[in-house]
Length: 141
Image (cartoon, rainbow, N blue to C red; front, side, top):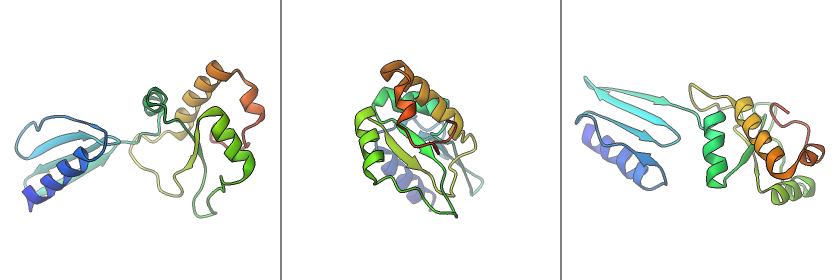
């Protein structure tokens, strides 16, 4: 079971662009897969997920050209980003509107910090005019 599960994690990690570290021991390994940490010890599996939605995650997304702007969503419904205004904004400023819904991923989730880093990037790249065009419910705006 352990080797199958470990092999599955390694296959999954290899199938996406991510950075993986070599195993520290036969029963533990760390994979930066949106920062997933799994530890196999004493027959127990401990998985800790670190969010990509914080200031350092925003810096990585900006560097990779996959910039998101985060919006609320959840039990009350998800925002509709398919309207022409939102589509035009996303194309013009090369960003993707995104909502995690009611699920938050990770112990260090900081959507506001993520968006603040993105907002600073947009200010530097495009000036502050984009702020007049974006929908008002962006987290941290």
